Length: 138
Image 1 (cartoon, helix red, strand yellow):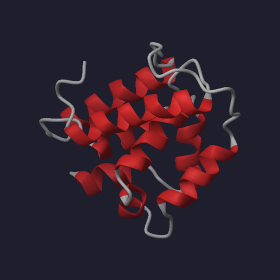
Image 2 (spheres, rainbow, N blue to C red; image 1 turned 90 degrees about the horizontal axis):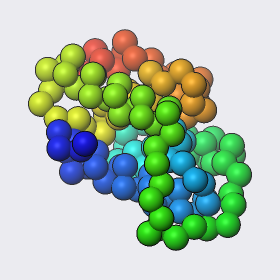
Image 3 (cartoon, helix red, strand yellow; image 1 turned 90 degrees about the vertical axis):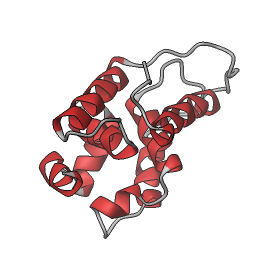
């Protein structure tokens, strides 16, 4: 599934999975994917929104997460439908931009495109938009 992902993009998803265990969730949701991206690339937000930092976005995301008891990392945790769509959007963006692999930035684009998740709403409210991001990555 992740053959066309760069090592950094794969680590973002790995970190999302790790965070699910910490927060006690039973699904890898859009917020976890975004937090994984922020952990992997400390400057990803500033590249697109110079007035914001990863910490600004992380704090906003974490406000909406209700922590539950930790769960073991050995348990298989599936992606939520929203997170599955993020991965599909990321692949589409990489292909549309003519990039051979899915990068962290494509994952971030996927989060912004995802209409149903809180993570996308937070990024859009902060000022990220797909068209400007595509132009910058193009």
